[in-house]
Length: 246
Image (tube, rainbow, N blue to C red):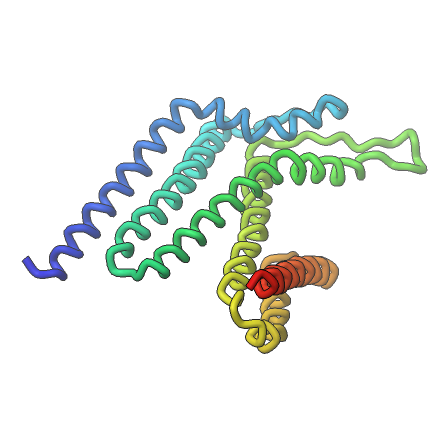
């Protein structure tokens, strides 16, 4: 048996495991679909204590469609996690220890940032978004006129998933910053050389990820630059402390 055939067998086996994992996750998620729906609605229901928020549906198949989107949403998350795990195992035997260590660090950091971003989205960002957008339903000058909000369940799910992916994507940018600073920790000259390129990359990412308005692009770019400079100064501080000890 040639090495190429062995790679093919291993790739086929791991792909089959991933497919089985995705299918089993979909089946289990379907059994607990009501709980999953409640977990996605709960951050908004906490806000509804003051605003009587509720959800409606206007199509007989809408609730089933919502459940289907939720279980696929959960299944894709599990699939991505296990795919990264199998890719790491598949490549580990052909990597140096330093390379494997860097990849492991990158995956662990990305997973930690992912957990923090999910908690940030559900506990802070989503309630704040409700507070901001629903603040426009009342007129400050015309007290006799009010706008009443009735959210469709399907539209809420679209809003939740879209906002969720944007939040997670923004937070994963910090993983790249941490990894880049870790890569340049022994060479401060490269930090100076790449500073303009990094700033331009922040601007490009902000343009791609934010809505098409200049304010959002500037705000996100400044935040990324500020966090990057904090990481750089922290790196310089560590290098200075290390030199003083020696």
